[in-house]
Image 1: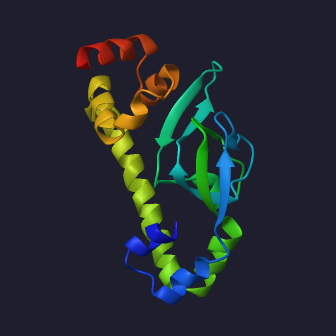
Image 2: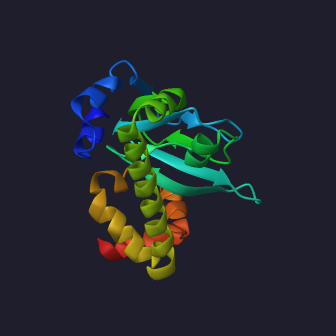
Image 3: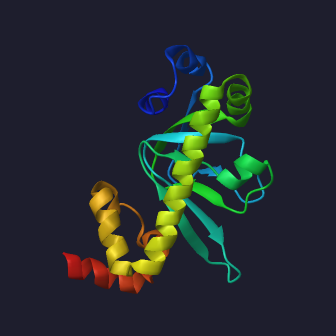
Length: 186
């Protein structure tokens, strides 16, 4: 996590050193939850290896995958993390996953004591917003096949490992349609 913050080129070394002792490691087994609906998000994680999926349950009781995150990406139930109110999403490990974790309390402390950390927080929030906007636009402008091709281009090592029903839900297509897309591309 420290290297990600360092790559932003905002924090002087003494500010980066404040992370020492604040970052912990966590391992999730495949299927374990980082957070479940109705809980309050108390941490942000950086995925060191593995992948996480965020999903919610719709009115018909179906799981709708709205986000899949991979190595070197941040993940949290961000709305809950910001508001400190219960989340409506579930975040689950797709594979055995190793994480670096920083708590809400630690981040708030960094924000309160450093304008540099406030800027980092703003940049990460902006990055999350941009990712959300790209996802929305992909549903408005791209076909399911084009969304699959983009995911395949960016994360080819995972595309075959993600269970079909999660991948189809994430791409906004049925599992049957996803099978046809895969056959057409191969």
